Amino acid sequence: MLPTASTSPQTTITPATPPPPPPITTRDRPAAPPPPLSSSLPETFSGYAPGEFFDEMFTTEGNIRPHYRKFVQRFGNVTREDFEAKRHSIDFMFLRQGVTFNVYGDSQGAERVFPFDLMPRIISASEWEKIEAGLIQRITALNLFLHDIYHEQRILKDGVIPPFYVLSAKHFRREFVNFRVPGDIYIHICGTDLIRGADGGYLVLEDNARCPSGVSYVLENRRAMKRSFPDIFESVGVRPVSVYPNELLEVLQHIAPAGVPDPTVVLLTPGPYNSAYFEHTSLARQMGIEIVEGRDLVVRDQRVCMRTTKGLRPVHVIYRRIDDDFLDPTVFRPDSALGVPGLIHAYRAGHVSLANSIGTGLADDKVMYYFVPRIIKYYLDQDPLLPNVPTYLASEDKDRAYILQNLDKLVVKAANEAGGYGMLMGPQASMAEREKFRRLIEADPRNYIAQPMISLSRHPTYIDAAVTATAGGAGGGGGKGPSRPPPPPRPRPAPSRDATSTCVPSSSTAKKPVSSPAASPASPSAAIPSSSTPPKAAAARTPGSCMETSSDEGVASSR
Image (spheres, rainbow, N blue to C red):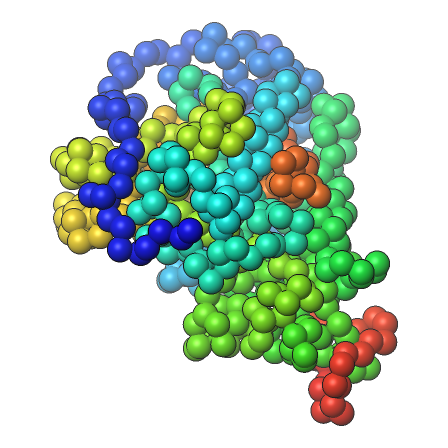
């Protein structure tokens, strides 16, 4: 039975929160002179010092880590002129082929060419096996959690998670309680953000279970690296990632409605102004499926069809890159122009499948992140293989008091924001910004969590002397690394955020997801598309029809 929405924190089981540990900051560590690097290193690395951070390429003694030795040996034969030529060539290709991303609210323009670093990040096979096992464990537990929450709710009845936190979650969909999703799989693709701390251990920063993005850049940047350094790439022996689109397509085809031997799969995009539109076109092209907008689809007799030049064509699986709220204006937000009227009715009738399923945003909630170790223990009877960053819940009195007293030391995050929005970097924030968040926390404590600053690992990064060096990404809130642009350009330390937005497609059952090679941390962060022309929306390849097709509905989109 579904608990009532009036349940409050005072009437539920309060999570046992240990006394907050002191925040981890680089300021608390005494500065130590870095050991000199080996004199046998290529000239490119002269002047590079590992320092006090965990360095991905060098040990604390200044020696090259074993899995980097072949790369450094081969890289030493690349002249600086050749390296610069390759960099400029890739930048030009990215610009010409539209490898871009959008930054909402950016005064410099909406679209940017994706940055690419030719210094690859390499992770050993033994380390990756541990990461892979941890990701599989995590997505398996989250799928079991979502199935339980939308059905028996045993985890709530057993007091493992207070019902208040689930019922008050922004993306908990009461409308889908007792609805059976195809294949009992809720999260088909999960984006897991990992960071590496000062001790070299991996931590999960957050889970993205609604519409995770970023994998196309992993796929495309691998092509760029292979094209730039084919000999070096082959000598290191990197696991391939090119199978990801095929594996993703297999997952999507698996969840097709029963009785459809050859399902039609489409990718539903908000359109070209979305920040991840390049990814949408790239994945659709590599999977060989149509990319459509809401206006390209129509629902007839609870069946979804795609408008084509040859009439309406049935659609069986939708890989949606649109949040729940915008999917169907007749059920969720009535002002949405991105979705498809009637889509949810077709979904409920079992005539179309969605990936990810509706309601997965509950697992995306940063407050739920706090409970993931308990979720893993409850459903799998295992300890987490990848631990969380220490987290404090502002809705708990003791945690809230600690957060408000230490806003200058913590990173505060809104429960349902992503991409760096709704976040306070305490040590870097102004007094006015901290006071603003103080008021927000006091007004709506359920909507905020806090985490300590983490000293992120770093990695040699080739930075043009004309570019200002920047600190690394947000860790539990991102650790700050050295910032000194070297003249002339040389590899320099840059805090590293590990395996960012790792996409893991689930397998045919919720209990054993397939870990996607798209997350291979050995690949650098950039992209090159295989074609400069994105596929047109709703371009028909085979004739199709749908029940009750009218003559004016066979209109193809020419965008």
